[in-house]
Image 1 (spheres, one colour):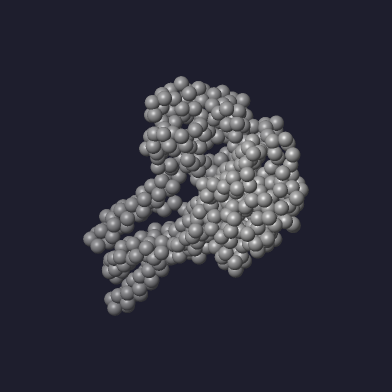
Image 2: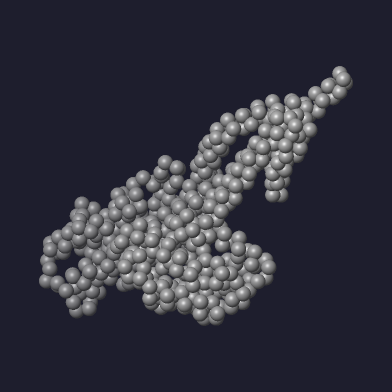
Length: 528
């Protein structure tokens, strides 16, 4: 009897060790999986946010320089149409333009001989002086010009934007030029922001077409040549994108970059990876604090019961070990034990595992569903497309975009804009077949997948949807319109990225031809 008791005691000790190791390993696996998932999500989110911010900055700068160019053109036209103006009146006109527009640090008329006839403010001290160097080259070119950064006569690092000036008789009279002092306060600084480094350590900088820094948080670096940076090489070739980079100080960064076509500049937005790591650290800490108490309670209860119940606990330990595998977790068979404690433990584990499985399914469903429209989201789209492509199944991809959706939000508000998105989702779902799949890709853009459907058939489906939307009153009290682009797998491409690109190009063609159209991608479409 004593030997039997000792043997039972050893089996219980082994069982306790196995349970402890299983629960701990399960917790580590869950924490690791959560860490990896959260890290990827944070990186994708911050790259997208950085790209969006750099894109907005580049658009603002692009629009600013267009306005600057128009301002200079209007000034040259005004001076050409008023040849009787005196030197004093011209000076006053330049002073007025500079003070009212605040586009330029200085505004000047340099005649065809290179002499500074007028300059505002007059305190610059160049009036009457003869200009050489880059400014002289601009005068001789007789064309609208935006220079690269250079050191001006006053010793400042300057960018000059100019317009040729002709008098009323068509005689060339030099240039009207606006100077931007890169290391001093100006309208560009106001657009870009005085504090270019935020609380996350994120910052942005601007690069000129020659690879030199035009704006940077470290003012001393303005004018520095950084053109050998591989990312900036792509940027200065007119590309926009986002990627993981190491900056000049060896710091790991998440970078997004946008090209400004009007002036050939580039904007780069960077966020330190260390900030992401800090967020992940807090996430794991919170997760541990959340599960710590349930974990300890479960361990104490399990260990207490395990001392009395060897056989049923071994069975339950085998079930718990399933957490470490990729197979679907199968809850234990609910059966009654003669021992009350063993019976309660079995029931508790069944309930707990069913709750975990239920929560896991709910989390997976939420991760793949758009919360506004209840449509499957981009993640689900990628999964479905990958499966279709791997099976070699023919399908058509239709990109769908609401025309002038920004004006809907601006006019009626974002709440009505959301109602329009939900209305579109419900309407399209009523018009498509049961096997067709409709996804919200992001913003006002949707994706329709049509399995076993060629692009010409997809065109008929798309037109049916477009016509229905066009002729139905939307939540804003009037119809909206949509534009659509179609590509076909594998006819147009067997690469999913290219398939997206081609559908987007077709959608862009629909937009450029007036919107409210459906376009099938072809090699004849322009690539813009």
